[in-house]
Structure formats: C-alpha cells, structure tokens
Amino acid sequence: MNRLDRLAYRPADAAAGLGISRSRLYELMAAGKITGRKISPQVTVITRAELERYLDGLPVADVAGCTVAGTRGERSA
Image (cartoon, rainbow, N blue to C red; front, side):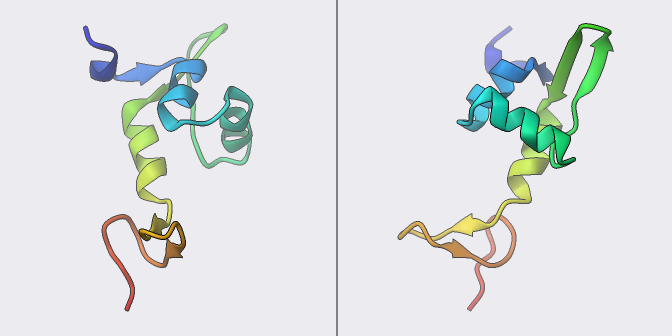
C-alpha cells in the first residue's frame, strides 16, 4: 500500500504531510482543530478525512501569499 493510500496516519506522518512540526500538530489537536483517534492505549492516528477537513477549513491564499476570505476554492470580491 502506498503511503498516500493510507486511511490514517501516525502523528509524525500526519505532521509531515501537512508540512508542520509534530509539536504544532499536537498543539492543533489540543486546541480541538484536529481530532486524533486512539487505536490502542499507545497508538494515536489521524484519519486522512480529518486532515482533509482541517485543510478545507483553512483560508485560501492568493498568489501574493495574502489570505482571501471564504473557504477553499472560493474567493471574495
């Protein structure tokens, strides 16, 4: 199975996929912005759907790197 085909990721892999540090991922989880799932007492995973939900909720950046109001794929006038 290709890494991109996974249904869930360990925190280090999820953070790498988002391009953030593992500690930043844990901050987002503590703030309730990303939800992890416990598959055993020692193992936490973040689903692919949860990562996509988080990304879809972020503001869209324009070409100059400034944020544009609205959701992914929508631009305000």
